[in-house]
Length: 176
Image 1 (tube, rainbow, N blue to C red):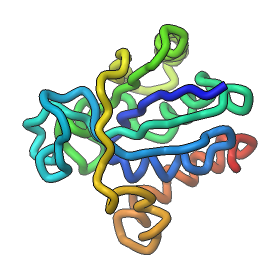
Image 2: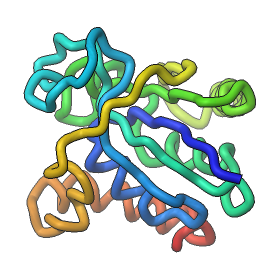
Image 3: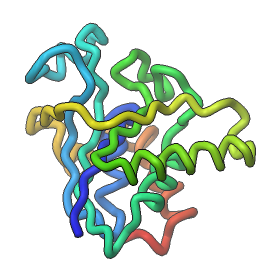
Image 4: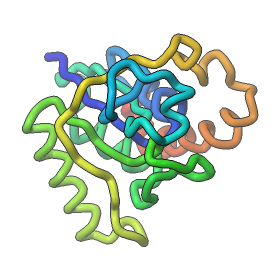
């Protein structure tokens, strides 16, 4: 069965590069969600004034990967304790959020975050928002498959590669 979920985890190039490698993920699309108006452009979202978050739309096969597995990968490959930023990327457009398309996804996200907080798996509290998905706007084509097409670019080397290394280390059985 196919479902969609949206992860805002900082720069969408990073999140896309991680989830493109996960078994059961059918498709990923970078884009924008949870903002003030329709069809924002990258240059507008980057100002932080549109209210949108950079995110990835993930279409997945629930028979091959569970939403809980996707949620675990998401929490492990970005910093869910950093408010409105990921590393040097600062602003509300880089916030940590999970945008669900079903009530079951929302419940799974809340349960996982409660577990992680109870077990104190992070030194600081999780600030990741959990919401029902609003309208998603696909990003411009130059943002699609960014890591795959630019692996030698310094941002990819310094920022995205460590996220992929975490995926490989902690979730090797989930990699395609």
